[in-house]
Length: 264
Image (cartoon, rainbow, N blue to C red):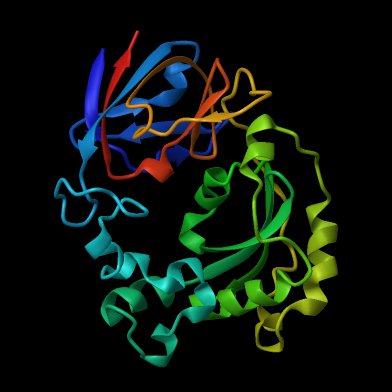
């Protein structure tokens, strides 16, 4: 069975375990059904997610020009504290920025390789936690816009990490933490203008991933250096495919790449 299309981040559904879907323009693949099957990945070319032209991907699925012009990849996306739509100030496209920034956002703790603080739109819970490979997570505050979430994250990361160690996450070298206790310890460090949005009654969300075997060593697949790869799929975690020879492939990091997938 063979498929061809442009890679975008896998879509997910909450379940026991998480359900993963690779979506192409005219088809989709339920990745859970491919566990223990041989999968061949061939690099075909590029297709920018914005202009859809065959241009080399610069970052996040976009060609160079679109990465520096499209509102979807403005600096405020990675640094929420730079959001300005609440002030009616445009970065690249105020209409788009208002649509995204002026909606409820969550500041959370997630445990994937370690406990870290993060920000996401409320509509992206628990998708964001799944994409990070977190096996447990909890909400800290729910605020009405991205700016307030951003300044909260900046304040809290003085006291707790805001990074995930992807190698530790994929090896499953993790331990359960008391996220409620961690959350309560951080409460005093929340900015004054955000304290009213503290989520008092939150409880941990637990997530289980479809992995048959975790790797003990990691080899990251780079399609430009290795345009053809075959391996037996052993798991999916975060946005990574895990193969039997310890190769891991980050689907999200390869958005905009056109690939041919052959399933045996």
